[in-house]
Image (cartoon, rainbow, N blue to C red; front, side, top):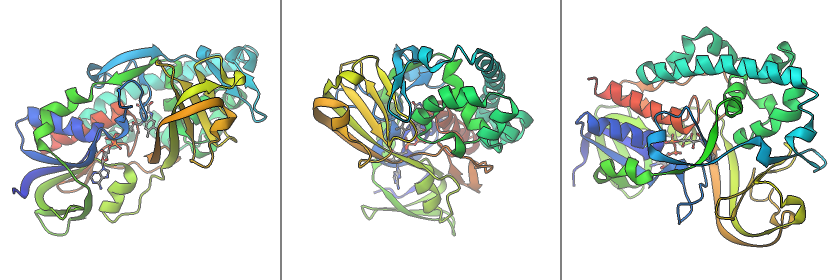
Length: 380
Ligand SMILES: Cc1cc2nc3c(=O)[nH]c(=O)nc-3n(C[C@H](O)[C@H](O)[C@H](O)COP(=O)(O)OP(=O)(O)OC[C@H]3O[C@@H](n4cnc5c(N)ncnc54)[C@H](O)[C@@H]3O)c2cc1C
């Protein structure tokens, strides 16, 4: 069995697979070791329902070639619940009354979108950490608490009443825990069309299929070169370069480093059944931050996803008259979105790269981190 490779990628989620695809196009030799293929791109057995990443936005230029767009996601198809559990549509929430603030927020979002687009283009060439660092506007937002920024712009009432629901559903966190950068980034679907999607995982994994080994990496020795990787199966490999493409927690733990990105966790049920009358209208039900259940979403095939912060926090009987569980999954960790002024560089030390969600957890940004790492490993 071959045990030495110029490059070993740990993790075959979108970041690891994008890196592998870029390397193969550059004629590079590598091995991918991963517990599974797809990571957060986990789907139902019939590939109709996404259990992890749920939406894409129109500006996911790297990801779009791998997806078929599904339903457009719009707040018109959602019910937002207050602390007492009363459901409201966006019209009854009072967006009209806060029209001035809503318009101001849209203007600020468009300004952010321009900077963000520019930063993303740069990230493929110089990494997200440096691209954000070099953009004064984004850098400042990165370390400014969301609520302080909202007050400063006089739009806090509108956000707390309306946007905070949408943020909780996408970040699984409250505004108190986020920076202005994340608030604006997570709000981009309000100004950029977003869609459900079907991801063609084979299109991304087939070109590198022969280089993938299913296993779990238990330790990395970065003290002597070539670096050594040990796996759960007992296999041991050496590599000149290692690309760690796992979520932040496992990545920092493999490097024996403290993780600056505290992850959120979520539990998911995929159900077939009949909703209670209160929850029968609209596709999406977004619950209040005080509710450990996060959202209930009707799927295109008539089944349902029910998300909560933990398994114990979800009472299925509260939402369904009758049901069968098709699948359930513990997203632990789910992803890292937080208030932090730490930007994680891609190159941890010579020949050791960390790609994926560390700075921005989205399919598009994780894909870009893979492209960037490949460009460093095999400059053209
Ligand atoms: C519930 C949920 C909803 C989301 N919604 C959206 C959304 O709507 N839109 C969006 O753009 N993004 C969304 N995201 C974020 C997005 O899916 C992720 O940021 C992105 O997919 C992460 O890709 P990745 O390749 O970095 O990591 P992952 O997809 O986590 O892949 C990491 C891979 O590493 C493997 N691995 C981990 N540890 C080891 C080890 N020790 N040894 C070997 N292999 C290992 C895993 O098995 C996995 O295959 C969501 C994420 C979650 C969890």
